[in-house]
Length: 77
Image (cartoon, rainbow, N blue to C red; front, side, top):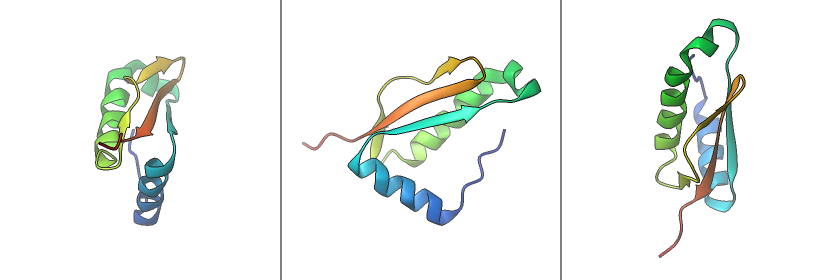
């Protein structure tokens, strides 16, 4: 499982996270489903890329063939 995102897409996601919640879904296919822990690591790495603008609402959750996590904007102090 490799997440390939272009630079403009990353910037758009970062801008979106500042304003509203974002639902991140990683869909696993076939043999990938046997390695759900690796998929969770990938989702966590993606969330660390967004860490300056957002934080995860709760831990990533495996639901069938999907790994789902919701990223919310950081709370202002």
